[in-house]
Length: 170
Image (tube, rainbow, N blue to C red):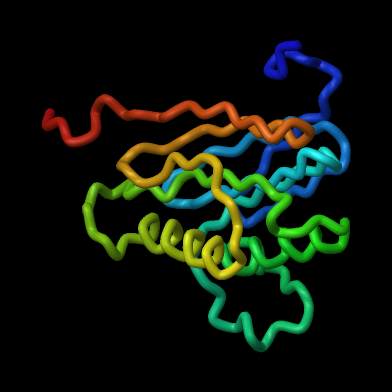
């Protein structure tokens, strides 16, 4: 089986500020810069989920009683939503495999307070708060990433998008 070429799979492009939770085998593709994607997978049920968060935290989070239209652009809202859905399926936090990607400093500021760094830190904080097991991560640096996530296996294919012209003078 070659998951990149299996034509029977449904294919979804995940845009910034979206979440995809898949009960059926699905190939989910997304491209990241400073944004962060987190994949969640439960081997027993073969349920997978992925988010594409653009900003670290929603300021109105404590005031929200239902999912607002822009909730998934925030890492905290997207992750709490995904965890809630896994709980609805009867999946405990310790039964979820987590992978984290993105958070690039695309402006090459090397600041510890860049949006990419904030997105990574928020993600890691939520992982710690919920006792989640991160089994793989590819975060930070100055390049984008293209991901292909297979919801039914939890596999993620990663391509680092390096721009050879970055930092060169003409």
